[in-house]
Length: 322
Length: 259
Ligand SMILES: Cc1cc2nc3c(=O)[nH]c(=O)nc-3n(C[C@H](O)[C@H](O)[C@H](O)COP(=O)(O)OP(=O)(O)OC[C@H]3O[C@@H](n4cnc5c(N)ncnc54)[C@H](O)[C@@H]3O)c2cc1C
Ligand SMILES: Nc1ncnc2c1ncn2[C@@H]1O[C@H](COP(=O)(O)O)[C@@H](O)[C@H]1O
Image (cartoon, each protein chain N blue to C red):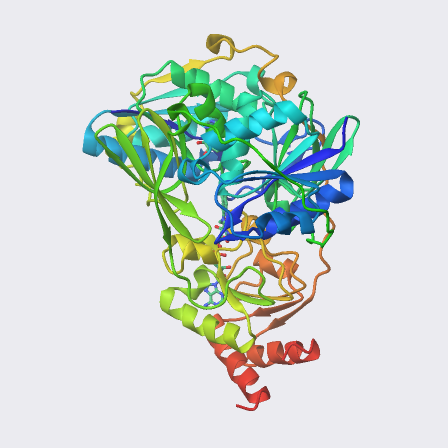
């Protein structure tokens, strides 16, 4: 088996996504890393990929990849795969990544491994580590089908490191035909998010169902501001409509790894834990002493968030001399 | 409008799911089961569409005999009938095998729209729906926060990292619904009574023309090699708030030089 590892590069908010760079870093450690970049991308995108380890970048800037979901990209990736036969191809566990892996794994009859935390090339295949069942397990699995092995990788599994490669871009022709133009993106709407983003925040203060309502998130915002951090939430709080999805931490939200994570009124369900439990320091406030979050906390306060958080805010203000 | 909903019946949320080290599969037999909340949302969305446009909802599930309880709840919510793929030969299927089974079962039903949950609550690979769509030859319109059907066209608001996309496709199509898209109705007594008389068709893999090279453990492309536990995090200190909780945290943060 060759040690050629491909990474499907993604652009969100006119930036190469952090997980793309994380995957490239790992790919370049294990073999020869190359990237595919399809659709509109900002200036300097290819340079960025080369900087993080891509020794070659297959590129088409055609708008079809942005205007029509999944099918055009699948066609192009499948054709390139057939030509160059990489050992492994990595996709982010993102919206686009999941759609592409689903379609490719069916088309190639190859299967795929989802939710991968790490992998190695072994015995002519891959061996992937999967933090299964909300990371309460750590399993390994492999793919026994011939051809390129498809992996969906969890964000924040690796640290992105600069690994400068000479820039080498190969243009690939865009696919055509109406048969691929079936899932049409008519409009893109950005929901404006106030305050700092979770991505990259050094401190995160998150709220769960224990917060009781939208208005009480103001208290967390104040605390986060004092700590120079961002506010996060559980799916329960997002589904209740208290805060936007962009703030969700966990299995189906963001995976975060801040220096400080303060969990307020959060039970600690496995799906939430899997998105934050590698944070450096975890502090939790919950009125139920049996809440699972306490088992993952460096400091646990059994108490009422509506007492503890305002007091904490006052204390920090005092210490800051305000 | 004929709608097929693919949904799982899974160990109830109160059950802590464990993996059997000998088979490397989840322990499913004998634990309390319920309709996956992701499936309940998909059924709800299907019912709302048929209430508006006419037609009926068929639930398709692949699972063990304990799944019957969850199938009955979908029928009690208002699904017209159900298909249960019940066969030891499909146990141990990977995502691709599961998708082959479900796609073959869907093909036996008339359908305009297939609805899946974006991910199941127990295995959450999130790739089965896209695989099904490929085998059916229909577009997979995924991560819907809102679903509208009008004049043979499906339009959704698709969840994105920073907002949503408005995405459109012609029917027949497959759509996946995100959690929180709706509040699934509770079955009412009348629905529960009616569900008892509704048909649950049982299929085996052979009925669907699928052999051991495609489904079950022997057909799986993905093989689980080892099952283990991650290293445990060192437990920290726990303090019961007696009026000083906030202060304690502040002291802790000061020790860490965070404030
Ligand atoms: C496939 C799947 C994916 C999922 N993805 C995610 C995800 O990405 N992120 C996520 O967060 N969840 C996710 N979930 C949901 C998850 O299972 C839990 O339901 C959710 O995390 C619970 O949120 P919570 O802790 O806010 O609510 P609850 O579990 O209801 O906990 C609320 C807590 O608040 C405490 N409390 C109440 N009042 C107070 C008070 N006054 N003071 C202090 N404490 C108080 C209670 O003791 C309780 O522990 C997912 C579930 C599934 C099935
Ligand atoms: N055994 C099954 N029976 C019925 N539907 C399923 C099954 N497995 C997966 N699905 C469908 O595929 C979706 C995603 O599942 P998963 O890929 O396991 O996350 C689920 O929400 C269901 O709609």
